[in-house]
Image 1: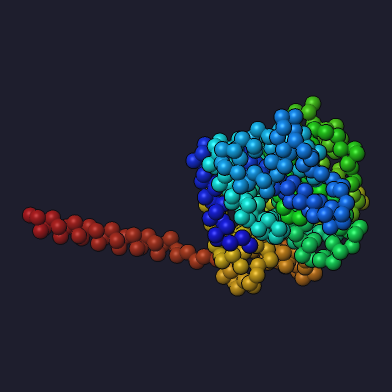
Image 2: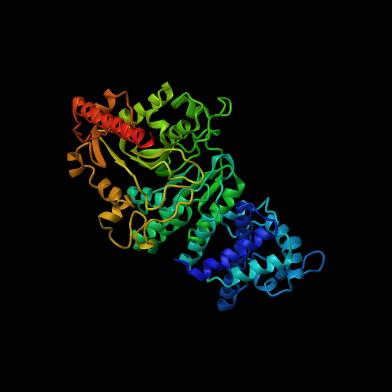
Length: 512
């Protein structure tokens, strides 16, 4: 966890950006991201220098060229360790006029992040602000993976407004719940076809580090972890930069994060490639048939993005691959042929494992739309026996636009540091949901449909036309209320009427 002092430093820089005229939080993060990358290039160059000095050999891979440019200026001036101590005006000129043009021509450090640098723009408005940000970043202990990862997550949490194309941040605790339910292993190939800031991939990486600490000691496993385990697609270049840097700061050296319009491009070369999909795709309306991948149209004939993404997930998963994805409620009960066909596919052709209904305030302040988590396994041969349903009524945060925590930090999330008592459960259902998920083939099968979770046999779902909304199967217990007989109520009314008439007569006599 980052300290309160560190948070207040970031808050001060954030305020400086705002007062300096940059009010778009994505732009603020993007500028800080560029500077973090410049600092990282210098760190890598320094490591190479130290290695060459130790071995008494020339450097194998120089990031900053030797000597001077065609105007006689030293390339070394472009290094973070050199320009950080320059006067603000000189630093501003070096970074704006020389470092950024250099970044755009850079093959970089070999990470996918460097591929997204060709349109890097320097928009920090004045020398004083640049000097302040550089000073702050220089004093942050960036060698500690947890600190720099948490620092970046804290900055991302400050994106308080929805982005373009229906993008918005998925809450960290919801991401954690989905990752914990899927329990990624070191051999998985994980994909998020609408990755945004790469929150799902980051959390999956942290889960693997935490639960399989020995995996990274093996050379083959380590190479897989850094280069071929994580795959993220997006068609927003800002998000690609931010997502790549997020992975980099969380210790994944070269994730496969690249530009792809997931719904428009055919995925034949990617089909059946991934063993795990974690995603919260945008559900922002519909696309034209002409711009939609023909691969996906063969699976489901629709223009609705949420259905097309589900078809995409089915196409990308290997047989035996698993998925945990967020969908709007309409996917669960929509009455169009496309809705019904997709649900029938999930139940009949694949193995639908569970449906977790989320409270409607989960994505506030971005959206009040009701959503659910769909959990399924691709089998191509059916396998659905029972579908597990869970209704989350509280996720640990208030369900209004403020989304303030209802419990101390150690009691939040799906795996809290402190076990929750009954009153804690009423404010945070996530640990209970996670525990029951792993018992879905055991005692969960015996639960009554009046409880918070229960299992529904496949036959009942087929009978209901493949409707997957929890309310279709949940039984509500109505308390028996005893009502008085109508004659008793009328007798009371007559008595009250008589009292009123008597009062009016007494008042008339008094006034006469």
